[in-house]
Image (cartoon, rainbow, N blue to C red; front, side, top):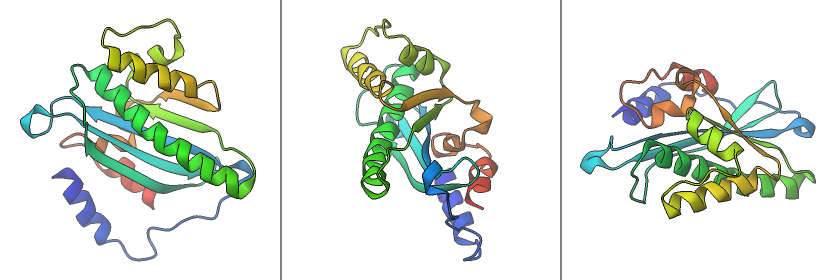
Length: 179
């Protein structure tokens, strides 16, 4: 419902209120905001969402977003958040490859999550989750951090992706990024 209400609000914007701002392409980087929910969907399914922004440090443009059901069985909040980080990061890596073909340089990627546990696990090469699928996903994210990717923590209240996965979350944070 929250996503539907957000879509309705966006439809009522004047055409000049959502704009793609001109960026300094020599300073461009990618920011990915991710969030997940455990068992919040019908049938106790888990949800995942991410937003991808192209930014030059002063101005940002939303270039993609996704809000989907996690396709795997998720047994913990950590696993749901990790899958969300991995999904958003995968999209950003493809976009980085595309941008590097155009501009001849590979933009840095910063992934923001409100899960301190994921940030800590990605930073520790020795951490090993019990679930093999989760462990493999963690190793994949850790490999990307060796090549121009950083995974950082952000408070939930400041995470614009929060609105994609949770009921009753204020949409102000996301709407501010679109204006």
